[in-house]
Length: 273
Image (cartoon, rainbow, N blue to C red; front, side, top):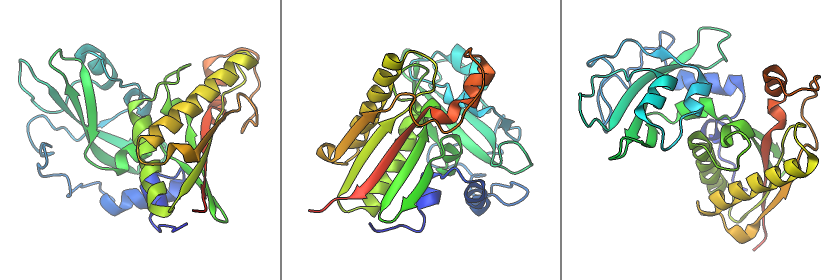
């Protein structure tokens, strides 16, 4: 394995120290984003038109953005775009979001530009971030190095829709980072991908869902250049919980408590040629 010293920054490790260091590289203490004030590469200048300093948006609202949504649905989640885009047939909305780098416990945040692109039917086609550090905050990846192996842990709630094996927009971006860094650091990577659920639902259903999610991740990474024949998958269902939460009913509070258990783990090792 060829370890890249920028691994954590590239993957977006779920470490506040790492995230703060990453944010500090591009965001001075007063958050005067000099690097994105000017227009460029299809992005409007921050001081142009309707920019108002940025919106402190709930990360879960961005994570609920999906292909095929209408402008009304996007507006319900994100509000009005921050720039005057025009009146008729507008197919791009530009937003300026402020994302906390410390889960809202302090005043540290970075300003991010986010673009929503619509198709001819005015349904959401795709989204873009101007800075790589912004989606990293939404979909952090835990990284553990064990000798020559690497264990990556990703949130199932970020990767997938509820009770679904369909990857989300930000989930795909997270897996793009996984593929890029894996191919950079391993000559012939072998992957074991394990899916996990929480304890709600039948054991058989959770096993099927966790296996299907692991298979989905494997298929996506194979499409990004990792040899499919070197990827194994396993559905683990509700096994090996990371946290224990009391409560017999799946209330919102209990499900939130159990969030760490809904995950995908990717163990990467160097194979012999």
